[in-house]
Image (cartoon, rainbow, N blue to C red; front, side, top):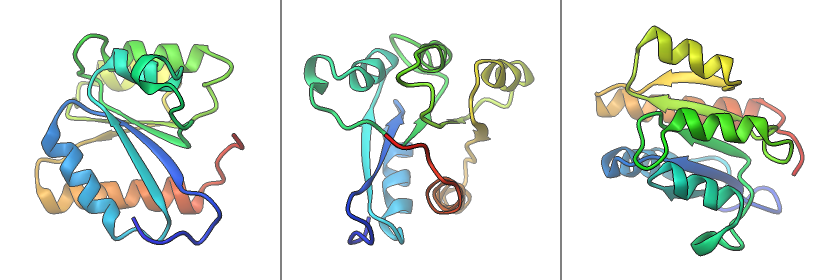
Length: 148
C-alpha cells in the first residue's frame, strides 16, 4: 500500500477466514503502485454487515472490489455472492471469487450467481503472491470500475 496517486484509496473488501491467506494478500499488496485500503472480515454474516454498514461496521467504506472466499463460517460465500448480486445498490461492485475449490460445480454456480471472475488459490506462496498482484493489476489498473 503506497502513497496515493489519486485523491482516494481503492477500497478492497476481503472476505476470508484463513489468517494465512489474509497475511499473504496484505504482503502482496504492500508493493502496490496504487493506494489500496484492504478491509477484512472473516465470515459471511460480517461481510453483509460490512456492506450494509450494520453493527460494528457502521460507517464502513463501500468497496471498489470484493475478494470472496466460498467456504466461510456462518454464511458461505455463495450466499454472500447471491445477496450482493441481487441487491441493486451492491450488484455493480466487482466480486472476485478467490477460493481453494476447483470443483466444476462451484465454478459454474459462482458464474451463475454473477461472479465477475473465479480464481483458485494456489498453495505455493510465490504463486499466491503473483495471483494477488495479477488481480490487483487487472481490476485496479486496467479495468475502469463503476462509480460509487
